[in-house]
Length: 186
Image (tube, helix red, strand yellow):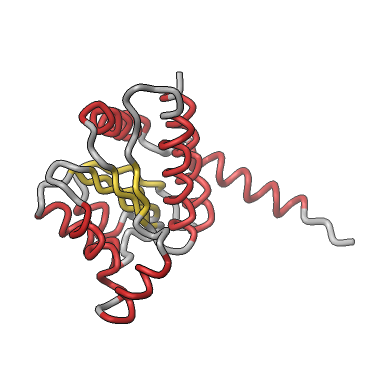
């Protein structure tokens, strides 16, 4: 049997060190933006690709059910990557780069929130959707990693995980969800 304990320790130590680098005030600001959206009855559109798509789906579950259950004013999160037939129709007939923009055109109302999750910050379909949202009076939020990429430059509000490691970035994007959920449930 191979002993992986040193590799496990190295990974966890790196993750712990990155946690200390995350801008806590940026998280606080995003939480206040999301609370304002809830209070005003705004929709929050969330999207991502790959692991970030799974994280986006998880955010919807935790905010719509986890935080909102039993409350008069509820969150209205919608995940733009959850309807696979819609995604494939847009990807096939128009462009994969426009799968999120086209859905926003159907459901977005001025003043809604658009939250893009991208480890690199350069996912073209998320970047295009964020640019469209910004041009259409959305409140924009980006959760990124690495140097933040294009998404970090576009979004009005952002939380960057400052590490050049996709797995740790994705871990900590999920941690942000649970951190915000735990606090906002109180």
